[in-house]
Length: 182
Length: 280
Ligand code: SF4
Image (cartoon, rainbow over all chains, first blue to last red):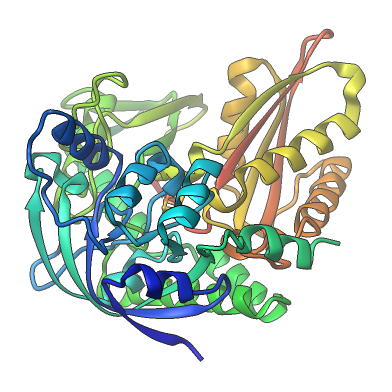
């Protein structure tokens, strides 16, 4: 059975999720790709306010396709998370508790997840049409000039993800592969 | 001699951009369906099921299968007897891309200078490979290519003594390296021979073959089969979360090469392995 989770989640909730669990996310998540991450960190260094409240934040690594007339959002699958590895530990230090993406993470990210209490969940890469059906509202809240790479606030309903690396460091990429290698 | 008008090409390319991004080729869809039946991991099975549902939704709603609607890559075969009227072929293709990506609500993913990264705003320029052929036909094939899987592709300059074992080792290494980042299951395009740039082009072209097809050379067809089995024995599985479906197919293309070299290129084609062809 898929577990229904209301996002955002706090650190305790993040720590309770276990690699291999399938979740349906309900609530609010924010998109950000490398360009937006880079700018947030630069803004912070320059003493400017951050565009979103970082505490308990869930970030979706995605850059949606443009919406057709009548659509809330265009196709919106995850992008490769590794490109955010450089920035993710800083965001977790600021309070981010959930990262949504696809693909491998480096050791620094996993160490930060353990330290701050955060979870890495993955959505199906390439399932942008299906995932677009799980978004009920979308608005651009910052860095509009970045186009698809701006920060969008998404309200999601039963958005399907899989807990891939949990806050203990259990990693489904490793255990899954081991289980099925012949 | 046959005359093909600039505007005809623009129109055809525009439609191809949209259709290639909305409708997954049937051979790929069938291969995904079959892998869903055979997959041993329960999570993997669910993922493959969702991937098929995703393609169904895209088809029904006429929306992009994946938000990354790719670099517009073209393979053009231009008959020597064709005369293009009204403008340059290259401009016609780029104009078609411009219109297709706009009207089809496709994402524009191309930046001008790779170091300064300003979006060109219309997904141009396309990357176009030309081949001059005999006759009166103009054949255009589009293969929109996503960045995620492209980034996991590799070129190895092997030496002749490394032989078949060297090729196998490199391919398995490349697939393991690509792992979860390449939106598995993949189609693995392999180019062997030629030179540095030729092998990469062969690998890309290999991705456009029908998924059920085998190389005409029995020895290469055998190698395709063996590699597919060995890749799927790695256990990486759908999306890299473990399972028996890591690749849907392995396609090898070869070309003669220099006595001193054995270039090898591996181009990862994600499960949204789109392509579409027209003949004008
Ligand atoms: S690699 Fe393919 S399926 Fe994955 S996001 Fe890119 S285009 Fe989509």
